[in-house]
Length: 380
Image 1: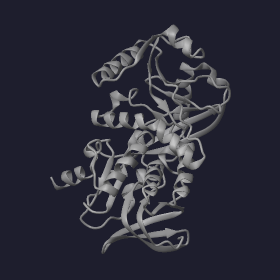
Image 2: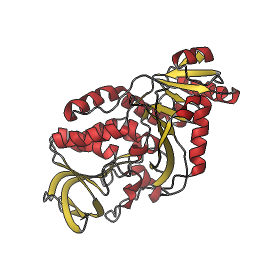
Image 3: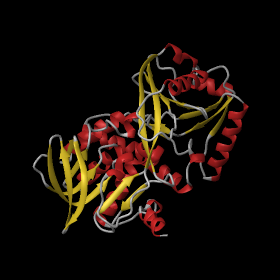
Image 4: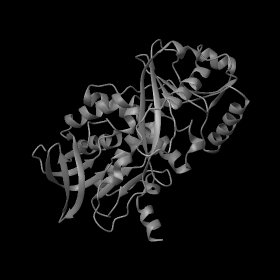
């Protein structure tokens, strides 16, 4: 350890949610220690994620309360990235170009019609495009495209954002340690005592407040007796990255695949949804599936260099909604279970949970995501 054994806040988890919260609390004047059991970002779902900020494109997959939360996050993202760049000197890779959701056959077109109905029901707008209009925007799309929706959904590069967050935490006076695994947590008077294994040593850290933000691993920390355990499971996702000539400017999606372009020529193709536990294998069948579906909508990817096949683990709770708030009614908090939306929801989760922790103020936007809902289920 660094020798700093007493802090205001200890954040357990160095993924994008934990880093965003560490930065937010440090900016509010708290002494912050962020602990990550491996290298920062190494096993974070965000390290594999494509970084789509997609409340409109995924409205049909989301609880209406989650859509409202995601829309608020979407609105704050440009300024959040700008502030992050000022603090860190690093660009988070925010790209406001927008998203095209395209149809390759009539079944796809029916799914787009249904999605557009959901969008209208929830007050969202999307521009309906003919095949010719879609190809005017993106000339490299396949000739088989028969229609599209255009939304204001955007993207960020999660890997760049996490690097910027690490630098911003340091600039704000926070401390981040990797290779520091929290094995136990107990209440110790007015503070919490965390047992931390750091390489070949073990130490105890005391903190006035603790936040469990370890993504799919959040439930592995042994909690004080009597507290509800989170019904957490990992949902595996495989992603393929290719690189070369930039073929598209928009994020392009079909009901079967998404393609997210980066300014440096990288193209992220994803993603599978697999109930395989913590199976970290990249499998030939799933990689072939992603590349096949991607080539159907963007034939030019066949000439790009295959650079990475990645696996990540989405943190999924029983109801597929995040858990944000106090676990014990005192100083033990959680910020986890963001499932498919961790990158998108990290800034607003950090801001609104910091409001709770620093000011005792709970915004109605996060009220539905209280972890107390699991205590109620356990009691029943």
